[in-house]
Amino acid sequence: MNPFLSSRVQERLVLASASPRRREILSDLGFEFEVLPADVREDEMIWTDPSRAAALLAELKAGEVRKKRPLKTIIAADTVVVCDGKVLGKPSGREEAASMLKALSGKRHDVITGVALVAPPDRTYVEVESTGVYFRKLTGREIAIYCDMDEPLDKAGAYAIQGHASIFIEKIDGDYLNVVGLPVSRLFRMFRRLEAESGQV
Image (cartoon, rainbow, N blue to C red; front, side, top):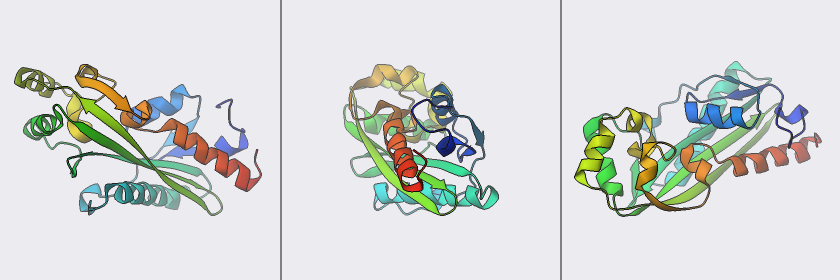
């Protein structure tokens, strides 16, 4: 259990994500939870408004898992990277990963995560966190070496800030853990709302 939240509000938690980063973040905070990834097609989303789309995807994921676990509290999230107005999801392979890293090189981009917290009987909270990340100028050799690793292939924007790509980062503006995959400070504020509105403080 996490010591900063009431025991009741964090009982029967389900993480609607297959992300090992999100599992690790929640585990490190002391949460006890079931992992049940949602079956939602992210590639069918229209990304004209990345923040709204990320929030909607998180809500859809939570809703999908809630059908299977209606008496449990669901945490769901979806993260995208936006650079020069273009959304960068997970690369399909090495070539696309290299293309994404070239696009990020020497620029600021935004990491946007939609977070949904759904609790019985009928409480739903959906919020969005955005963090600015600044890449230094990357060399072709650095991009090639990094793309030869497995690390970029299952990450939005083709990099893991907590991994080898940490050497690419000049600075960040906002929540570091949001870039890893789950904005913990925002999630805690959502849990606080749940506590207050359900009388579980």
